[in-house]
Length: 182
Image (cartoon, rainbow, N blue to C red; front, top):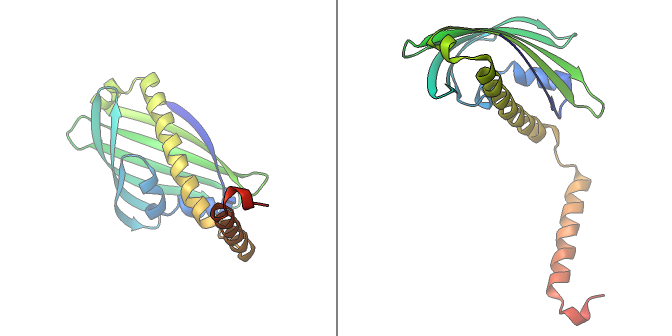
């Protein structure tokens, strides 16, 4: 099954790529996922709990980064997951392209080739998988945006002065009785 998703983040491609390649940053952003071990820079082990229709499944996953083309902004990874209760498995190849946007942000385009086996294949009807995938990617993107926004926008000295001045003026006007305001 082929899945296509895209979202934007408020950081340049180099910073977005650095975050996407850091298992301590990216795995916690995936809903239901937990990093078990970073074996090396390109191999991670993770747990993922996902609900396909009425059935919840717990997967143990091996994640491998198979290609990084920094100049082109392309990362390809594979994920191999096995349900912990023997209900089947899933294999995926995910290619992400990071495209610079006006204003310094990045558009992330993800193409996923997803294959299920066992009971997961029976539950993984295309409409259900696409719906679940879209929701997971939206939550993933929101988390990445929050992480990248926090690191990308430090307050300047001018911003600190403006915030302080605004607060002082607000307090000044709140203290004066109504008849004495300018």
